Length: 358
Image (cartoon, rainbow, N blue to C red; front, side, top):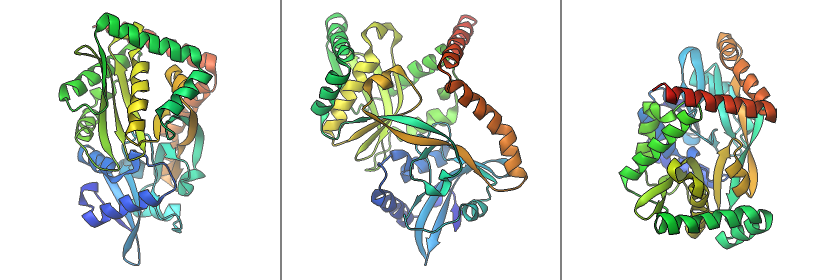
C-alpha cells in the first residue's frame, strides 16, 4: 500500500480509479469519483488516498482525512453524500490492514455506500437516501407523480403558471455558468441555515471554496451543475450538485423567500428531473434526511450507513468518547417523530432569535 496526498496521484492511477468505479455495480455517484477527492485535497490539507497495489498494479483507492491521534473521516466528511473504498470487487483486503497502513485508529463515515463490505459490519445506523428514477424518461416519472400524488402535482404546476403570470415568464437553465447565480444561491442557503437554526456551512471557508472549485469541474464522472429557475430576469430558486453520466447528486438547493408562495423549490426540482432525463441521467439522488419535498418527489430509496471502523487502542476510545454519545442522542431524537418535531421547532426559534439580535 502507498499513501499519498490526492494531488500526488499519477494520471495513470486516476484513470484506473475511474475504470474501477465504472466497472462497479453501484450507481455512478460522483462523490466517489477522483475529481471530488482531488477538489477536497486542495482545500483540506489532511486529505489522503491509500493506493493498494497487486503485482505492481493499482487495484484499490481509499480516500480519507486524517486527524489527530489517527482519528480519520471519510473524504469531505460533512458534505460528501457517498463514501467508501473504490476497489476490484474480488480484492481480498483486511480492514485493519488498510487502516494500519493509513495510520488510522478510527475511520468515521455518515454516508457509506451500500455494498461496501469492508466496512459494512461497522455501521451503527442505516438511513434512506431518497431518489427520483427518470431512467424511463420524464414522461414516465410524471405519470407516477400524477397517479401517486395527484394533488401535489396539480398544485405545484398551478403555482408555476401563477409565478409566470405574476412575476414574469418562467424559464429554467439546467447548467448555468454565471458565477453571480452561484453566489446568489450560496447567499440564500446561508440565510436558510441561519433561519432554521442550523450551522451555516458556507461560513466555513473550505466548503465555500470547494463548491466554487467544483462549479468549474468538467469530467465525465464528476461535473458541477448549477441549475437556476428564473421568473423574468430574476432568479427565484437554484440548486448546485454534481453529476456523472447517469446520476445527479442533489446537494445544495435554495430559493428566494420572497417567492415562497409559489413553491419555487418544488418547481425547480421538477424542471431538474425533466432536464436530467433529457441529458441521459437516470437517477437524481436527493440524499439522506427526511424532508417533505423529498417525500413528494421521490420514487424510491437506497440505503446509506453511518458509523465508524476502529482498531483496538487509545485512539478508538477517544473516538467513542468524542462521537458516539452525540450520535446516539441524535439517533434517539430522529427515531421519535414528535421529539424530532419539537427539536426542529427549537432550532427555528433559535435561528429567529439570532437573526433578531443582529
